[in-house]
Each structure stands twice: as structure tokens, then as C-alpha cells.
Image (cartoon, rainbow, N blue to C red; front, side):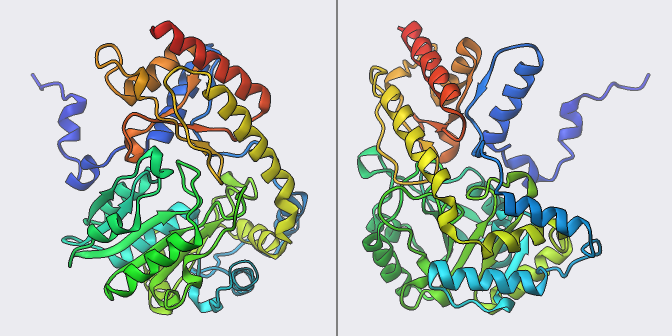
Length: 403
């Protein structure tokens, strides 16, 4: 009689690399929220970083124009020339960066752009320094490339920004990359000019170290300025700047990201992408051109919405006993320290707390361990005021019932 094979039997045949990585915590919580909603539960999902705004009208019109043709054939792997020229002009206008069209690669979302770069520059035996908290995929992308993530922690009192001397201390002869986002997902913290200049001084000391600057939230800054790391002296040749359409233009589903990089890195990224997906979606590229051509001031109403929502949620969080939070300067996330609600018994960590809140009060939040900071929860406030108010009321009720 043939032995019945279990799921565990087949899992044994997975690649060790794939078996070792985790499903992104953000997508895991979103999936669980959808499953409960399908069962008839009233769920408010604050797990995904997905703006509830409609895309700009000019972006949708560009899509309609593109569908009418002739953009229906394979595009170049690195993107249409006029799209890359438009991105080059955007980098110059908004960021003071002089990337040529040949230094631009258009990808299927900023996530693919990041993975392309990590695979192009790292491999077994290499290390990548990642200040924590960090976006959940950074560490797993590094592992997929066979390299080792080196996490550099920060605290709430440090505004969730690892001090530069601590980052420098993590660099070894095996370090190939430093990866960070500013504004930061998940904390919303924005690195100041002084902090970025201090990091640049560290990079100058280590000629074999390159920097991935994830700037996907550049247009969602409430206070101060957004400064591109590559614009600092000597950093253009050491930096890969990553951006895209998902956040500022509310085009998450169109999956369009891009990089600006030294030419030799752009060529390597082009080679990697050519073996995975080839060129990004042709219609989305026409939309991308319309977006990067547009005046960024058109995004101000959306930015104002996010700032108002930040303050709304902060006001409610501050009423929950023991919960503490900084005041983020950008993006659309809050990362409160919720360790006061972790008792070590029923609630052993942030994973337990997130699952408890989902089950008990129907609010989906992402546990902080996957962002490199245990004892926290990430809250996305990229949804309506009404949903945010109701979610915070439910969370407060759930925490009160914990005792």
C-alpha cells in the first residue's frame, strides 16, 4: 500500500534558501484579514501600506491613451527610452540627481527594483547592514541572495533612527551594502540632513560599501525636507536610489518602480531583470511618464490628509495605558511601543498581540518583530478617518479587556 505523503514530506524538497525565508508579515496579516472577512467577520485591516486615495486623473488618462496603442509589444528590459528620460528629468528636478537615461532601470514595482540590486551586488559571504526598524522584505531579500543581514537596532527614544556611530560599528570587511528608507517604513521617521551627511562620511571611509536609498515615500514628508542621499558629495557613485508610483500616486496595483544608479550597477540590474521578468508592464510605463512629468505640488492635498490622519491616530494611541509613540515626520505609519501590553503569559510578544487584536476586536495590525523591533505594532493610517476612529476605539477596548 502506497504511503500517504503529507505536506511536510513535500516541504522537505524545497530549496533550503526558500525554506529559510518568511512570508512578509504585512502580506500575512492582510491575508488573514481577508480570510476572516470572507467568513463574515467585520474586520478593519490596517496592515497594508496602501493609500485609499484614487490615482490622479492624469495618470488614469495616460492609461486610457496607452491602451489605445501602440504600447502592446514587449518593452525594452530597462524601460522605454522616453520613460527613462522622464525619470531622469524628475531626479534632476526633485532630487538634484544627474542620472542619464542609461542609468535608469524601470521594474515591476520598487520591490523588484530592490531585489534586482541586492542580487546584483551581494552573494554568499557578503553582509548587508540594515538599520532597524526596516521594511520587512529587506532582510529576506538579502537572504535570498545568499548574503547575511546585519541588523542595527534603534529605540523609540532615538526616534526609531539608529545612530550613525552604531551603523558604522556594524560594518566589517564583508559588508557590501547599507539599506535604509527615509521616510521610513515602518516608523515614518525621516533622516535629517545632518544624519545623512554623517552616514555619507562613514561610507567615504569604506570604498567597497554601497548604499540602497529607498525613497518611495519622498513626497509624503510632513516636517522638514526630503534629501536624497545620492545628492551628497561623493555619494552619487556609491548610491542606488529606489523609487516608484505606489505610495505618492496611489498606484499600488500597477506595480511600477525604478532605480537610478551608477552605470555599471544599472547594467547589472538590467541583466538580472532580463532573466526574471524582462521589461515592466508597457501600459504602466506610460502612466509612470505622466506621473514623473507632473508637478509634485499636485500631491499636497493627499499629504495633508495623511498628516491629519497621523494626528488623529496619535491622539487615540496616547489614551491607551502604557502605549508610547513618537511623532513621525513622514510616510503613513505609526510604530508604537506596546510592550506594556505584553504580559509574557497570554500575550508573549508582538505576534501574539497582533493576533489577539485581530481575533478579539477585528483590527489587523502588523507585529513589529518582522520589522526588527519586538514589542511594537505597525499601524498603517492610509485609510479613511471613520475607519481609523473605529479601529482605535476597538483597539483600546481590546487592550482594556486584557487587564
